[in-house]
View 1: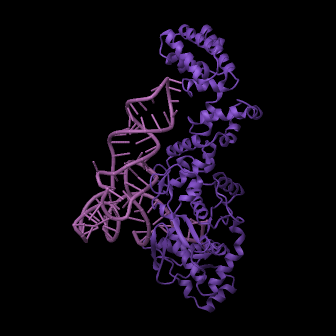
View 2: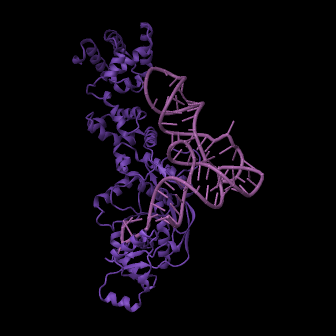
Length: 484
RNA sequence: GGCGGUAUCGUCUAGGGGACUAGGACGGAGCCCUCUCAAGGCUCAAACACGGGUUCGAAUCCCGUUACCGCUACCA
């Protein structure tokens, strides 16, 4: 087997779509598994729809996902000369011919055929023109397109995911390969570029299956080796239709901003249409490289389920070390005005421990920040629901909180074990369930009825801040909401 | 319409002639753990599209039907 050379060839007409990202991922996994090169080609021949911004978005998306590419990025638009030369070779070899039919004439004939409920196929009338006539029209400056003359027979290939697929050539029209303005049609440009890039395996979406016989015919006519093909399934939305804007976020950048980890995104995308076999689900990129095989590629379209992505993200969040999460979390901490980068850096060990404490309960990066407020200096609000439920009778609640404060103020050492012992003792003395101490304390400390274990909260908060929060809560309970 | 592709729980999938009473995961319901919420553990509901073959035996192989998807441009 020659060294594998695969490519990802997006059109820069929007942002990096999750479908494209997944196709890129499969290409990348194949190359990193078997060795070889993963190349990037920007199909920017459609100048009207291509933008610099979306090209950059594609690079950023791939980089974020960790899909690095080899060699220089190829811009299809820069290869116009070669595309035209290849068309010229096909005409010279008599594999293609000039067609003087205008778009308007073609439309008319197509409509007429449709009206008669017939399938329109180009009738090759221009292929029957004499050489003299063709020369005469060319000399006269009559505009022409170039059509590929589809030979008789059948075109088939052994697809790496579908097995043998065959098309009778009679069902393939003599398709245009060069427009009358001299620019190549998609199939022509792709084949010309894939030959030039020495691509050995074309792995792309299965919406290209019916382009493949045309492309194979082109390779052969050009005298080039035909590469292998692997057509991977599409991604659909929850309603079973092709994934589009109305299904919500479709750009990988959207998920990045929602707080999805790249490792989770890549893991989730890989499982949409590929399986390592067995029950493996949560995997790192390295593990996927290890396990990847085209045998595990699915034939049917997969539906994008955001719920499972969230779950997957939660899994990756708990497995990712705090030090790796920190660069993602810190900007959000700063944005939420909880602390400055310098303050966080000054007590990095404490900060990393806090991230470890909160990440277990997070499904998005931002969830860590949402829970982080109580551990920083600024005063906290009390959730109405929490206060109502756990501070039902203010006087009694204040009473218990005061005793709790006393215990904590003098507690030595400041450890979960000591805290637990002291507070359970208190509960016993007062003849109440331990939860009757813990829950009101949780509200005083965090303002919420949900948090990590209460002793973990106390440790992360530190004695000084914890006592201050208790004092604030007591003032609130004694004097009403205004006093806090 | 023509051509091509696909078809296992709601969703992602395991499965490649007998190990299938069809397994796992998400989501749903419930229980356990427990100071709350997550996490974790356990349990439950939930699928081989349909019809014919082939075979001693079919989710697995073949054919047809149906449904869905794609292509059918001087779009990509």
